[in-house]
Length: 193
Image (tube, rainbow, N blue to C red; front, top):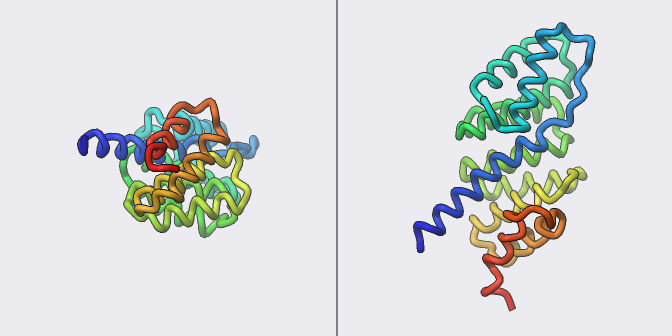
């Protein structure tokens, strides 16, 4: 039974790492870029969104980040995408480096704090993850179910089961079509009145 619980926790933590890629990029980069840079930006973003071919996409992110004409928002979003790719590969340290770089550029970006919460879950900073997810919500993250989900994971890891249950319920309520999110509150059902 403990092996099953540990496996479920690893799956949930892994999902938190994958969830960040879904929202790490809002997209609109300048079309005036050289074709190679536009292609690198697209590849970096697409891989972060899909979670595929991370090694090649990391190279594309690196190439795009060398373009000196990037604005702060573009650069921050590339750092977010690169952080998502690093996190998906299990490289929390490089993900945190990119997240900190993005924070210096654009700290009021809700996706940044969502991505930061997922990376903090991966490295075991559950207090920080919970606070980052809450900050993403304060900044108006949409869709917000992802922040509630990351917050729930962090709270559960901190042993704050009632708060975790509430956060899982909110995530499931906001994304009723998501089977994984719907399953989380049921894990707590036998402990609730």
